[in-house]
Amino acid sequence: MATAVYIEASAKRAFASALEWPGWCRSGKGEEQALEALAAAAPRYAVVAEAAGFPLPAGAGEEFEVVERLPGTATTDFGAPDREASGDSRPLSDEEAERLAALLKGSWTAFDRVVAGAPAELRKGPRGGGRDRDKIVAHVLGAEAGYASRLGLRLREPPWEDGAAVAAFREAIAGALRTPPVEGPRGGKRWSGRYAARRIAWHALDHAWEIEDRSDPS
View 1 (cartoon, helix red, strand yellow):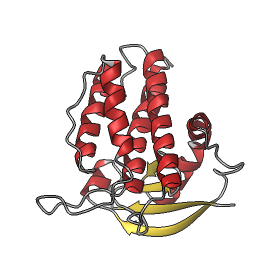
View 2 (cartoon, one colour):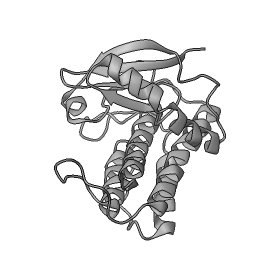
View 3 (cartoon, one colour):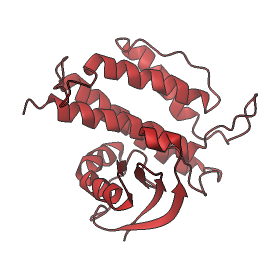
View 4 (cartoon, helix red, strand yellow):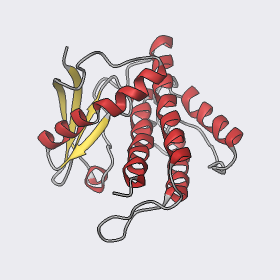
């Protein structure tokens, strides 16, 4: 069966996100390129899904069904997915919440595994750009503290060297996925659990795969 995806596209960039597979999300200059990148990432994502206990169906990356197209935002242009799918606000069953949490945790596990095996200094881009390993780790945790606020949590970014603090931080985020989205105290809408899992897992895996690619001296 084709994998259901939705597209968000702006003038500069498009993202293709697998609806039911948090973290399997790639971008390109347009829809076609984003779908090609999503297919190319299927083997990498399959490792994450398998470790989480929810293996991808055979051939999941071979055929996609675009079930929704959404206009992008300035954040899309900047380089991050920013749109919820139309059905994301539906209440999560316990089973759905557990599956999303498992796949999100699988993305964190993949990130930690890559970080543990990476050199402190990563290969630079063609113009000498790019963060080194430890700065990427700090960036991911800092971003997740911000993401947590969109789930109604107030969490401080933990020191990345403190494994117990990082584990507790992540457990709190995963546990909040089932909280229904409501208007925040200043009118800001919280993220749905489906979108939060997708966005947070994407960010962790995007940087995990960046570290993996930039650890290769070639």
